[in-house]
Length: 273
Length: 353
Image (cartoon, rainbow over all chains, first blue to last red; front, side):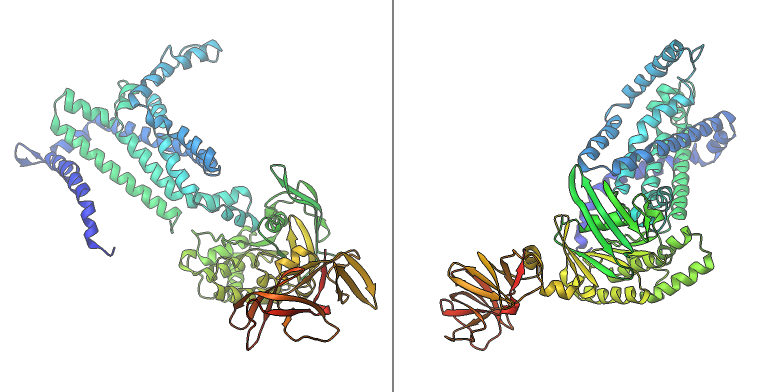
């Protein structure tokens, strides 16, 4: 940049983020290593040695992972279709895809409760056509959490993928076909690797979003805890702020590890992306 | 027998015909250009041959076989795109090797064939580069190498030089012609640049509104356009529509009002009823001499506009038969308003439809 003075424009944002994000996070992490004035890792030992806690971490990771995979599987073909449309239809479909983001997650979770409940829409329909004999237990299970979060996060992956896919020159597919590639091979060797940046960013958004989501798992998961609800419980119900900070730190670490891993996979799949 | 034949082909988008009952024959080993203004159907024709779009009606024969419904990836035609369409996530080597690997060629043979073809396009040593690290001309050569390395039965170019700057364009077209002749590969070349088409082609097909108006070797088209559209397209700016036409002493007599002209038998159009003549600005002569030789057609007029073009002057001369544009080299130019005579050499008057 020619004019160094332009960095001044960054200043408000940097000051805000430092005061209200960086400093609190550093303080939270630091506080986990001190109890009654002396250095300790007791909080971490307590958390990691309790099988109940580990189960919560495991459930959280499993739900986030499945949510991400299903979002990719549902979002990829839809995004490809949308990216091929003319500007008018593309606008309409993108608006529809984003629509779930515009409603409150509380409202959305309650709708899912109505659909998935024991006497809900899904069970009564299945019972009435005789596909099942007694109601399925879906609500208040990890499955319900996944359904709610897939609904919540699918728009994120579609937006990022469409953004990347519409910049892929359609002549590339034609070029691959003229060189002898079937439509499927052309897709696998050209579209897929070139979509990878969007796929990775979308997946990170979905995974981190699912990992840290609170409302949806709290309302649809019932007693089945995830890290975020467990953190809330420790802080608000048990008033154990030290443990809550430990959990928060573990959550941050998991997030960074996952982002790092995904970037590594991305580099492997698309060395020039 | 022609290598490639399009028979009665029609292509339509949303019920609007781009090509209707279209015919084209191409001989083996030739480079044929499709030339015309945008929207004339040249790119559609090329994409149809490539297999990127399907004909609504008609037949496409290649080497005696019916190719009408053969999918793109089974045709073994090389296609060079205007945008080059190089795979941005692959190195030059992998781009060129793409078609060979799909053909299950052994990796060692891929290596020698890629090396050889990169030498042909003078890009030896560029294997590890990625497309975004290359200049426009280099990308174009990678695209050509990628199309050539599969030893295609037919090579197709879609405005391959229009994204290059003027100097590079001239070099590249010489290069394309050299490679095409070296490998003796039948080629269809689409462009809207006539100099480009005329300089590299064996045959040029000039298209207008989905029809080939003339298919001839470049020199013939340049001298003897068949239709008014082609004449205008290649720079015949002057036209006279005559009322009467007669044959006399092997010449064609033409009359309009009280002016009579005679023209040599020129193979512009063979239509015996054609009464329109086309003339290039460079072929007409402006003179102030009262009497010129009897063999010339003469028309009195006066200079309306005189423009200095560097090497020559351009005059617009106003006459009874309308305005004529003339380019002429001279020491002392005519002035605006000066009375002059316009001479029309008999052998430079081309009859067109």
